[in-house]
Image 1 (cartoon, protein in one colour):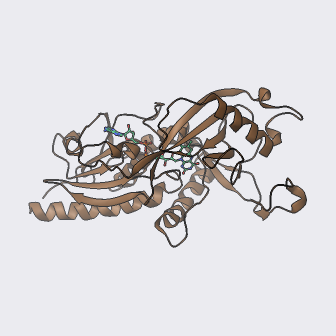
Image 2: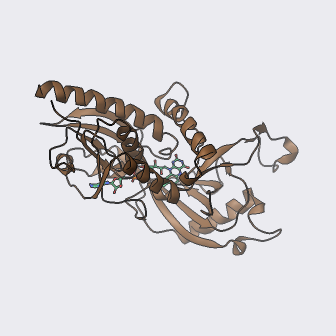
Image 3: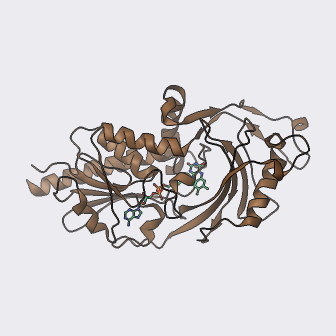
Length: 343
Ligand code: FAD
């Protein structure tokens, strides 16, 4: 009887011989897979938590939970499935680096609004300190026996040879994010970057805020969130499709800081401007955007299966548990096929 050898390419692994990659999608998938003691999971990735690189999206995210999917669509369903996990971690697991941002769920009255704003809501959500949360996911996987490796593969078939047992993996879980565009055997040219530029500051306004639209162009955005446990405040941003530039644009950085102070004057002292922001760093991340939505499906290669789980654009954290659960269901189906074929 074949064993469950899984490689997660990106960041996740299973107790079947499988390989994953190490972003939030791979790590979450590997963690769920590793909860089944039958699975033997290896995670193989070019980048790991602690790295900051333009090819590695997850560390750059805010990250918060602001649902964007419609309830009757997959993204909305994944967001709904993910919320209880993030809420539970914020409530009961301080070491995961997730906290609630204090707000009340209410419609703001017109006298609370800048005259140019028609309507607004306030609500409670969570903000994830990615510098704490990604290593926490690694720790959860390691506790369940997942083996982590650094590796770069140029073709998905090579990932199947990376299982820590030395045997060929039955299933490879492809969590390579934007790099699935150039990965041999996948080459998904429907993927494109949606470039996000941020400024991380020490100032703490004590709330999370965002507004739809800016006067600076359709591909710019304004949002503010403070990460848990001293992670700094993220000022964003931009959503620049097909822009691969890894370098922060200084002019855009100034527009971001000005817009954030306009939206939330409490970021600085009364009457102060961007010179009162204490900057930790400027950053750029590339969201893995697929206009048709993330790809979660299984595919048969010659002597192994691939389960794809990539293309989560700007909602990878808030859909992570929902889409990982669907990927795990596909891995289980693939393992059943693999076992039947070897009986
Ligand atoms: P990645 O994090 O890029 O991970 C891919 C992994 O695959 C890496 O480990 C990489 O090394 C590995 N890999 C790739 N190719 C290979 C190869 N050939 N060989 C070996 N390893 C390989 N989401 C939210 O939910 N909420 C937010 O508030 C939010 N804010 C964001 C703000 C910004 C500025 C940005 C840029 C993104 C934001 N996102 C947010 C989106 C979220 O960050 C992404 O959806 C998510 O990080 C994608 O994760 P991933 O694991 O698919 O990809």
